[in-house]
Length: 604
Image 1 (cartoon, helix red, strand yellow):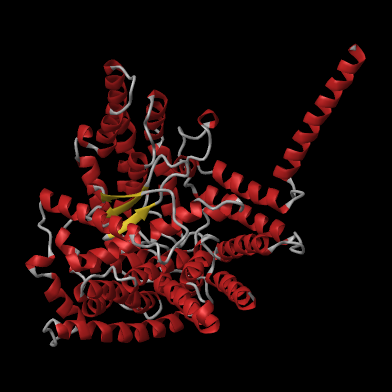
Image 2 (tube, rainbow, N blue to C red; image 1 turned 60 degrees about the vertical axis):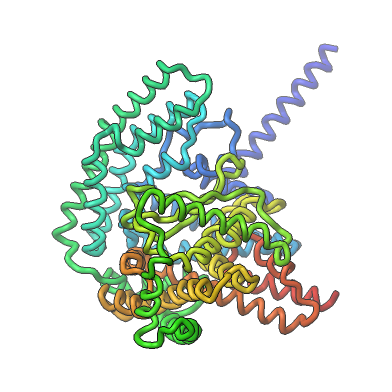
């Protein structure tokens, strides 16, 4: 008996050693299986990003090693990540793709495309502006704390406070990155520096008790069951102390860095003015559109689309009795009519948010004829946080958590409700919510039978192209109720067409901010505040705005080609399945997926 027990113990120990050796080999060397490599790539990236783990909520509570940490934003960490990407690409390409099924080949090609694009951007690793009027730690770090970091018990409240005390380290890393870029001649536009400074000074000017990080903690603590009043008071007091002694000083250092930048940020120029700027912008165009288009080709496409969409808008405007002046001026006349605006009051803002939700509820109930794959996760409409309203876009989407505890959120900017006329609301809701971003991203999160990276990998042309396609699809299905509703859709499509012109105009043709603003005002009819925010956005994220129209046109082209080839065998539901159920893809790979589907339908 003793001999058997010893033998069994030896076998068990041997198995444990073997498993540990296999795990070590998989982590440090080329994994035996390609799927194991995929798992390692995602695991390494996730472990390196505690904020992403908090957002996704995919790990069990007992495995919480991250909720008291923040992401590393230092230049050294960025260089380390790039080195890892290069190593991962080399390992991936060392695997043979023979024997992979269609989905396996798609996983391989998707990751390879993504890694290659990132590695090709190595010469421009410092060209971005990590703090700008659109995003950065000054706005996104507080929003992460308020919208993502959950407080459902005392431990999560302790983690919230721990993260607040890490603001000085995180902000310090960002300051280091800003100074490194500055040393290389990479300085943000003047308006960016001025606006970010004003934004940050407003944050620290507010009393600590009124800071959103404090009021948010107060509201979250009020909903925690089983917490004593004494514990609530103590945790709130510690939160106030952390904001006073850690958060505000962190903002102070960033304010000092931006104050010093003011002497150098004396112009508002595009990417062309940066070191190796033309090559940087050409890469940005390829990266965001997942195509081989050149800036000149994109510019010409934009001019053609502006003319086409403008002709459709002109017909509706003439039907409304408006035939004189530019498209933009006539749309503004319609948008300024009292019946098209919600009042800039608390009641008006609540009514506007309620109407957005009603639009989403309506379209969600009526999509059965064109979709048989639907997301399980819900979506809510909320106002953009007040602190970010001045420089935030008109709307944006934040994805929900993987465990279903946090829904997707369609954020609508309430800085001035009249900036979005009522006839434009439907299109905005379809783009950000259903069947746009929420629909597509939630379906991607819920994919099964694929490597986890496929559930989160981002491709701007696909994500934004689908959302713009969704606007058109909703109109095709009769959800745009009136000619003016359709004008709202066309106005937003015109904005995306105009982006092709002004983004390349700014970064390739050296347009001034004023030139770009005037062009967009004349073509779109958007409110001046929205146009200003849009143009300034393009300055700080070169190429990103091109993805919408390029992606949409590709999806439409694939649909029309499939219709032409399949005839009576074409099924719109099945087409949407092929576009959605594989997750985000580069446009070239999406084309291959649709072509394979067409070939199978033909043969059936």
